[in-house]
Length: 131
Image 1 (cartoon, one colour):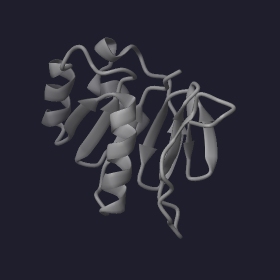
Image 2 (cartoon, helix red, strand yellow):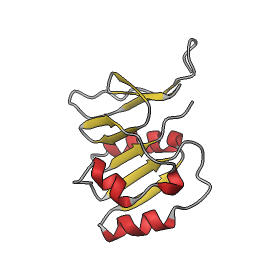
Image 3 (cartoon, helix red, strand yellow):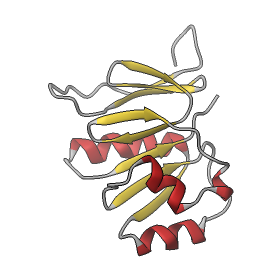
Image 4 (tube, one colour):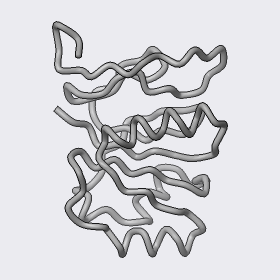
């Protein structure tokens, strides 16, 4: 952790292109590819945007698809703390669209995202901000 904030720092992966690498999270936002985002974010391999999601248990497939109409075949959903419910309806609805949902804490989703991107995988991450 930084001495001056609650932001958790993740080891930097060297990248000479515009891949969206998550360098830190916490303190109500994210540090992605050198930019600070306050609030929740939706990340694709080459773009990050702020996102204002409903509570995880109220999140719908159509709300996610509205944010990114051309979703890749894998979506990481980081819901803050460890998820208490599997969000099965959301997973089933996304599966019908050809999208696999991986539900986890925001911390785990950030780490998983960086591994997937370093492997060249086509994915997206919907990340709830954490304090």
